Image (cartoon, rainbow, N blue to C red; front, side, top):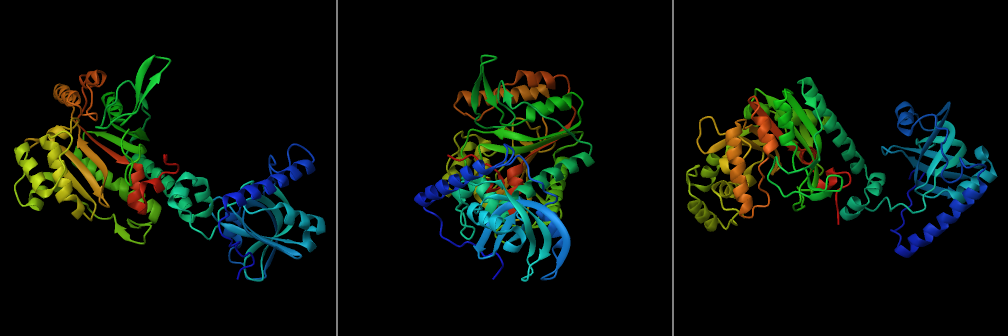
Length: 506
């Protein structure tokens, strides 16, 4: 038993919450009435903190039970547990990072009036400032023996029961509550920050330049995806939320920024599931004078560095306790060769759509919306091969008709120099030897336009401005794109809605 036991009541009903809110609002009114000026009351403009709860725990966390420091500290935190009995009240104050310290409010230290006010005014969920000597209680709990206190922010709604897990829906819809009550939620936010910092550090070490490109575009491009559309009143024109920054980053390479990257948001008007979100964070990077092999090496380094930044090792521990090894050199397999081996027949760039359709029918694979050779190959590969990948794996050399921005393979006709990286059974990143020939690029865009005319809503339009940039000469370049949300999934083992701080929900 601790000095400050938990309030272990069941979750309040809607009527009970309404009643509690009314009581708390009355306390707010009392605090307003009793304040001496507009800077005080239930929401003071400031409180005189001298340190933080994490700092106190770092300095005094090893105090022996019953020890006194003789040092006075003023801290603030949210009341998450309390016990108000007799002449001594206990409360656990929690800081934003989840660390806690006990506040001990005694009759002898604060007087009868202040002790009574504490009992009457302080509720679970309130932010409270306390000042007093730093001690260790008789039970060894790091504590503040309170000499003075004040409300730092009055909560008019109660906290959820800290001993009952929030449902996934509640966690997603009310992430602020999730952050208050669940360590994992806070750890995920910090992990994401560490990942982004690590990515930027790895790029900086390699002389990459971070840029920002438009989110509103006059036409969508850079990926095969359905865009969100909007209208600009200022320009009286239809605009698109970007589906990828690719075509702008390549313009930067044309302009002489040989190593460039961006970490920012993409928007795709598609389905949402355990690995997809309509709005997601994306990293894209382009390096002149390298190819898809060099950019694969860079991607492996980026991910391994990020894993070390979060977990301290390339072996990460997922939320379910499973360990996953992101270290070493990752496998690189051919899409066509791996598909042929898995299905027991030779599949090449020359295999007809009819033969692929027949194989799909045998295996019960649904036909893709647009029945091209490449889309059938990718569907069949996912059916036969994808589920068997356990280690991080680069799947190399894709069909030409599904990759309009990728250069043709240097030695294998009918395929392009593209890879997809699979980790944990999902696609984490993709990389290319970029297509830099403006004549071939125009032809590829024209083929995409034909697909669009036949009803493919994901097909890219012809981007004349991008083609004009290419016509000024783009050096040989390797490029990659990776979802930040999915990178967090690979490192933490969480679903995509857990890795996004405030995901979109209906």
